[in-house]
Image 1 (cartoon, rainbow, N blue to C red):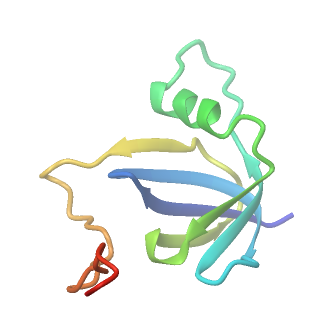
Image 2: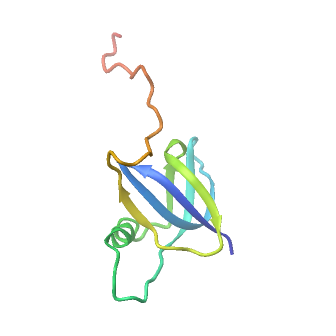
Length: 109
């Protein structure tokens, strides 16, 4: 069975999740992730970022991620711990650039 590790940006945070199925979504510009995998740790220590990730995607069978938010997709041999990482000034990851001209809010422009 194929397993993919997907790293993407979402609201200023870096997400690392595992999925069994990845393909171009029906919506243009989105990557569709299905059958998300969350590592079930047997240890007594629980990583808070892994727990937050499991809570955020609880009950989700399929999610769509904007293609410009995806940093990397790897096919891996086995799943690892998914996590959410806060980005700060010391990281070298930046979001995809936004357009220079933003759409006008006035209909007359």
